[in-house]
Length: 410
Ligand code: GLV
Ligand code: MN
Ligand code: MN
Image (tube, rainbow, N blue to C red):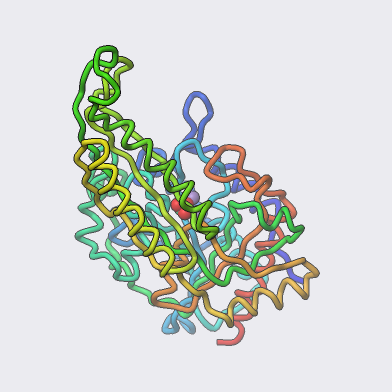
């Protein structure tokens, strides 16, 4: 059975993972930052060294294209993910999928395979959405879900403008997003959750992905003295904000649904120990695999905000930052993943992705699916993120098999 070059893949994951570390050794490569540029430069150098044609589109998505005169007219098979990271990240999220895509192409090239269609390794801009909302912004723009102009005008959490930052780091490319409509799209990723490890599976054949709803909530109260203002006389924006996360947790526990809710950012003004907060700005991330349940949860949040506004004597406004419906992946590709894993003797189960991924966007224009490998202790978006090398190699070999099936079939 054919295999990818395990050492090369793992060495690259760690080399890329060392780019963008601060003096405390924390890894942060936020989209279109200087650290992202350094990671992109490294990736592009590898793509060139592998003899691939490199294209960058106007939203900064990077493509390493393997094609020849014979197959150049065919729709490409696209493989990819992202190399931007969250704050204080692990080294596998996204990078594994991009580097495995390159590894599969190099393996096939070295074996002298002549594919019937081009194969592309893609790295999409701002998948994480930490600096610019929405997440998956590069792939969303690629499929036409956001105009290039609107995407470039996106203002970041630090007040930067994405288009200006892409210019500054040299990744405002010229290709039009969507320039190549894929024949199919495959994304290999770490699970980022506990299921595969807990149940003893090596590979997850991802058949769907849950819906995501992001909002930013602003609560305005009245700053006042923390020592002299009786509890009943406060318009406390901080307390009102704190009620939201607590309520959502209790509501979801009562409803017994698989929904998840996260208040991931919280900022108080004036942010002083002895001043009742006049303002609280925070984000709420809601997810559920079922569209109706996700919409119902959004309605619960809206009603809650109105009620808290009245009860706490505060003004509440909110802005939607991202909204993506659940996605079903292509059954044919999911079956091809299972066929490969059976042949290779890996224990496999079908599963739902809890995280957002570029595949969720590309699925709008091409048959798509994902392959997951286990995450130790289910930890991700954390430097402790880890996947055993054998599992990384197993996932890349399954990707290789599925790619061979598609490029051989035509
Ligand atoms: C991306 O990592 C997300 O699911 O938020
Ligand atoms: Mn990811
Ligand atoms: Mn992530």
